[in-house]
Length: 336
Image (tube, rainbow, N blue to C red; front, side):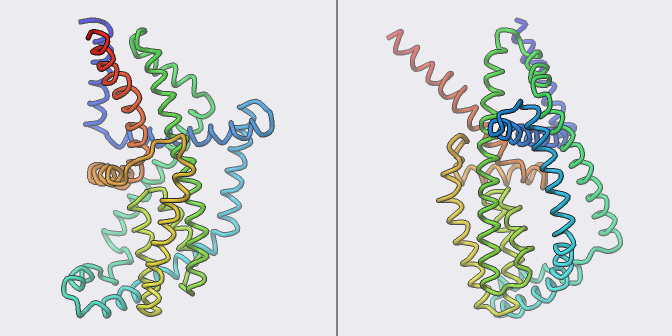
């Protein structure tokens, strides 16, 4: 067996072992890489605008991001926390109101029966499980942030170290694959953050105009869940519809129309304009990958399914379809 084949086999076996024993580790590492791409991209953008070195741009971007986060939680955190508490106070009543409207529809009533307002507040073992999950999620966030910071500060160190594990004859192609993966992630991130901003602003204005309670909180939730395409907007709409239903079925219908209109604008006008460098993912493929990763890896897999699919699709098109399959066609024409 050649050294090239041995190198590929060793990497494949190592990947499968980690995937089998600790799949969440791979997802956390990928989330850290996504964070590194985000930080590096923001730093390079500032460096180009200010005509300074990339390291200084990264430092400015990281400090601005940290200060902005602290200011947000300092100025708006208390108000959002109060709205979250008010939301939990209103939610049981909204669910009960919804139950009253669907009592005449057996199949809908059966679904609503699974929502017990008294179980919305965690207690006993469920509270312990929630606390443990919160600690685990916080630990993952810390790891993701540190991986992102180290990866953004010195990407060559990690790219070079990973490339060194590949046979020398395959290193140029492997490095090219890493570069193309970075292009896909940068394009996807840019598209998502623009979409999140547009969705948050339009949703907030629409809910405020409709007089729905807690419009700022619902707008922030809609913006954040836009990070998960297709499925996220549906999840964001549910609490808004429930709160709208507490004001009457007419308001709930207007809320549904608002979310559909905002998502239509985001999907067909905003995202195509900012996805020029990223992979345009077919909606059916995106939903399928999200469901698969959600079942296999939980909420973290659901959140990262789309960027993983974007990278896989871009690499597949460039290195499998164009180079391998189309290359075979070119060889056949030459021989013929």
